Image 1 (cartoon, helix red, strand yellow):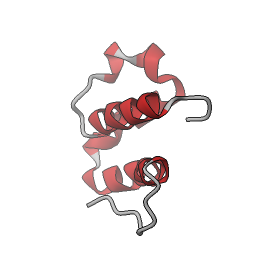
Image 2 (cartoon, helix red, strand yellow; image 1 turned 180 degrees about the horizontal axis):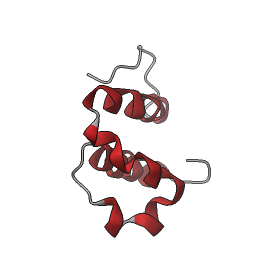
Image 3 (cartoon, one colour; image 1 turned 45 degrees about the horizontal axis):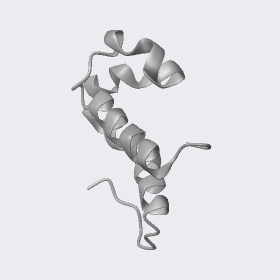
Image 4 (cartoon, helix red, strand yellow; image 1 turned 90 degrees about the horizontal axis):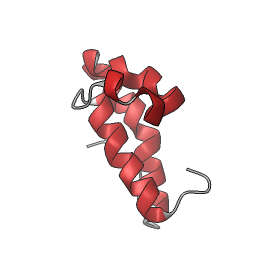
Length: 73
C-alpha cells in the first residue's frame, strides 16, 4: 500500500475482502488487481481465506493506529 492514501488503502482492503470471499469475479478485474488476482480462487478454500486476509487486517490496524492483536474474526 506504499504510496496510497489512507482512503485508498481502506478501499483496497474492502476490494480484496470481496475478492477472497468470492463476491467479485476476478475475470472482470484482472487489470485492476494485477498480481493480487492470484488470490481470486481462494474463496474455493474457506480455510485459506483467513490466511489470505490476515496481512490486510494487520495493515488496517496499522493505519487505524490500533495496538491490540490482529484478528480475522
